[in-house]
Length: 219
Image (cartoon, rainbow, N blue to C red; front, side):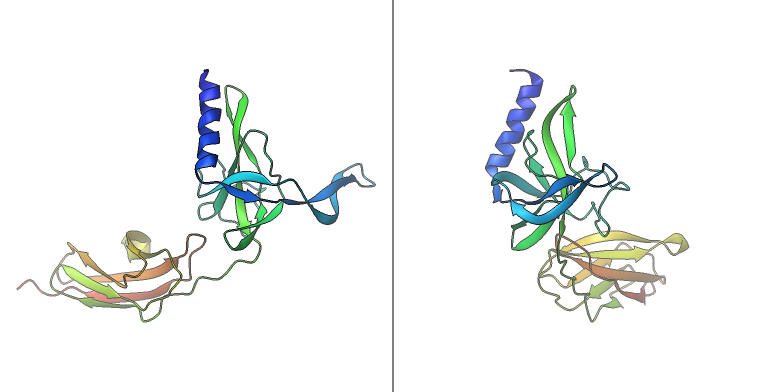
């Protein structure tokens, strides 16, 4: 079996391991008065196809053609076989949501397509609730305790700390169901500023904070 056939077989196995059967809805393409192909008419059901839906993908870059409001770093992606049963603009229901297919990217090996990937955007995004009651309190001369209220229906909480020049950087990912974090190994008698946001596998909430606390004096 050639390397290409191995890659294509691996893609088929990947899709088979975690398949999602969808019925794409597609509008017909017609020529307009300017000899341009444009979508026309109502969405019509296409033959069902098996795809795999996964988080993120480095193979689909964010370009000028990316649908407005789509952040490819946070989105779900559809992985299909080389026949590309999904086309840009298709809509379908899966995972309790309605999706629209973004630009389809053919992934090639030695010039031949072995799979296709496309970013998926929720037709009706659900805003992620911002964490409430975010607070910071010094524990001792090298630790600060952060706490916040339960948001619910989130995947993780992302903690960021302010660095030089007022730039915030992520320092911790906290699992759902945990509502506190201890930032340790800090300098004594130093003020630290934090902000927090929730993530639900699809999008981030607005930031909570900033909040600040000052580490204690070395005993």
